[in-house]
Image (cartoon, rainbow, N blue to C red; front, side, top):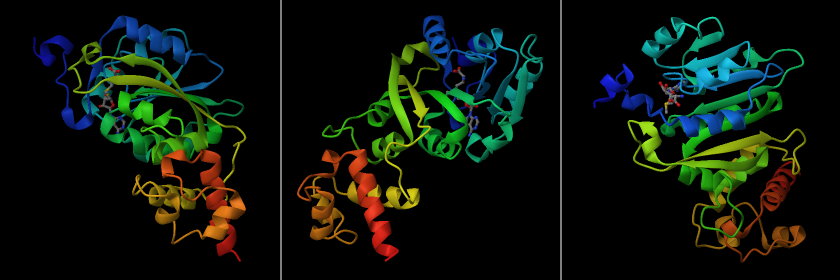
Length: 269
Ligand code: SAM
């Protein structure tokens, strides 16, 4: 059966459209999201409303951001959703989530994300972290493994450090390709991200932390000393009690933040 006949909509590859069709998986994701009226509920990329319908069922209002104009038209005329949805047509990467903030309410954000924009979108959302209670995203399984990795493992890298700087990261469930129409080429997984209200290791300049992580992980097989020699001396590493002969994946988030803060202090004299 073609996608069009099955869904009544031709899936657009450029918008990363793989629609969830497995009701068991849908129920489990909605259970993890735990929709309620005490939060501003926000969905990114509602598509054909596989998650939108069951989430909206138990709440009064759901805000959605969808890029595809055809899908927005369908949502606007949807028999029961049209009265509950606040629809924003546009690119979630450029969306100002501050405009959704309501007095005394935190946001719960969720979505089965187009995989090509998932990493930049997460970083975009981290900018609004103070207003976000939690986020549930369907991602490539490989990305979930990287987000939730521990130091010393192959999956641990720049993405891990940056995500765990902002959030607690918990894998929720794995989702095989057959649960989608059309099926994606890769395995998927749902992750829960809980932004820290008080960061355990605050950094004085997040852009610098990002730059330091990129530089450190540039050559994973080299030592920290080698990769970061433009930024930190042997004395610097010693003062932080960090073994500079270690590989970048052996260094904790706390240690990355300590290194970034030292670079900042040195710059500020
Ligand atoms: N939530 C639906 C589901 O689970 O079946 C659809 C998921 S599909 C993987 C991704 C959805 O995000 C599509 O509806 C697509 O049109 C939309 N989308 C793609 N890029 C987007 C962007 N930059 N901003 C907002 N929505 C986007």
